[in-house]
Image 1: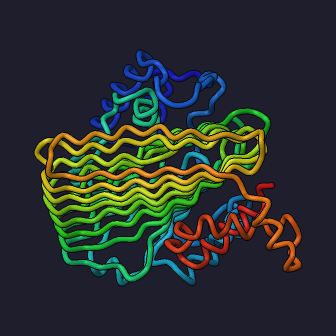
Image 2: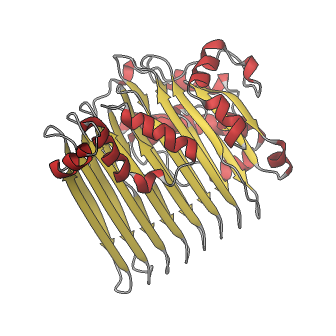
Length: 433
């Protein structure tokens, strides 16, 4: 599918968007066509002419699973998404290729004036609020993939939590790539207003094909004064997906942003959740796990930018490499000259399970004042024969012993997940041999 002005205009017309969105799309297209691939991370070789940039939905958006087309219904049922909505969630949206096909939220949140919509609906229902924040934190021309997303974005999530509002259960969106050569370009925009809190969960999977697919999402999060946001991601893409994602949050005074980031699949994954600590006493953390297998490249990490005094950040990055996989930590922590009395901690641990796999730690750590403190610790190790022998002497098989060691290695990450997602993570890790 050729990416040009005609296609962009067609997408915008199908969605019946206001003119200001079409202008943003066309400006982004021009940037995409002129920008090279990023000069950081693994080498990327995508034939952009083979990607399907937009696929029209079969059915209209609904809040009734009985009205979802049979293939999508069966897929989300098998993934456990439908059952999870009833048991654990305040609201759920599901995207199938290009479009959100199901979206629902409990009435109590509507009464609290919480907004939880797919992005396309939010543009129409809340244009002033949407336009106030959209593209202000992640600029469309930052790199080739932010430009691509801004040109062809479709679906995604829009959340606004009003002041002094606390959600007792998470909201979730689930993204599924189900077609060959599919590109998925959801756009997520979250605003957590003063003294409010939100836990948002994102799940991602893809059907396996022999040809490349592309996922290039953009996430912008605004954490206002004394607000709290936790963003939990479990991405289990198939091995033919390029996962090239930009995720960024800005945190005001006393606010707290937490990224819980799990990366299990994809051919090449480049993802570095970022927090900008803009005002005093704001805090942020990123706890991540990345597992590479069968020559996959996981190039992951986090970015923490301290702009104000008395700010704190914490990065814990766990990675696993096996069967020729490569797991890298690539991160940036910068404490600016005006961010006095700030602290940053980074801990990167990698476990390598064979002689064919590898890992690199590629940090950039900058402190521009003398009153702040930054600590970075990194370890890379293999499973020792002594540990294996001890566990096997207790009656465990070699594979079970290895699984036990791995699950213990990622325990810090697993503890941060809701129980049902921790169970699912165990299953996924056991299935990556």
